[in-house]
Length: 347
Image (cartoon, rainbow, N blue to C red; front, side, top):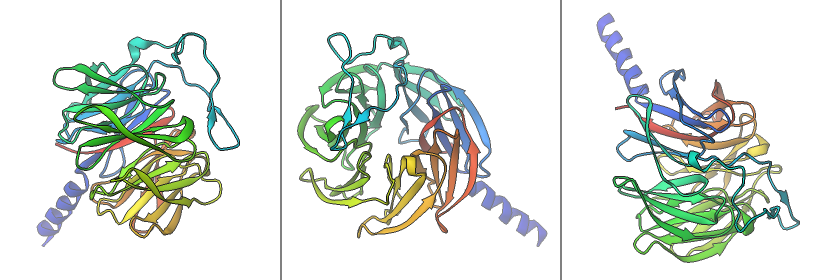
């Protein structure tokens, strides 16, 4: 009986340890790796300047990290309509004279060895990105040049540069892989780029500072937060238009949206409010508000749907939320200014 109980316990522990959480630390230039089994630190990986966006290859063997040599700046002033007001920079474009362009790129991490194995050319100042459906290409927002770019991973080549709006940030591939969305902070422009022609086939607007996009797997509905005005936009992803705008709880400054694995719940990180909003992903009702750390930005849900992880930039830690009770159950120290989060299965 004891042996059977021990084997059962070991099976539970093995099952619980089948994923790891990768956290980019914008100011310390590294990635913190957290064990899914006990929330201990598995590794700290130096990667370079300003790691922000982070995503995992479809096979779970590679982790990609956006790196930028453009110095960190304070958030811009906001006008009466909730749009950011950017100071005019000297020169012919938006590039920063103090930027270290040699630091720009997409870092390539080996998930087994926890080592950075290379860096892909990614255009200027990459902030966020998404992988193509087949995992062969990377779609990138180039924040300071009003463009999106496309990398062929196997060739290590920058293939396309696509004009979009000012301050592009969030990038998300549609579930069918035929398009990707780019959210632009200034003016609230959302560009829809075709992945056959690599051209923007349409664009629409939301209110100020849209940060990210999440799609239901059906491909018909998307969710886009507007940070400046504290709103969540429900989007018709087929016709590229806003269906519904939902006011978030007072003080919310929404950053990231992510779905539960079963797509029953939508989670919104509310930045300066220090909370996560929980929505019914189909009825759009606000179900709960979860108190977490300071200014949660990046988020990810464990593959089993039991835990949510939120990056708290000012407090240099990661909140762990039990999604059965919708309560924070742990805080894990990360590097300086954690920004993005991705979860990968162990191989």
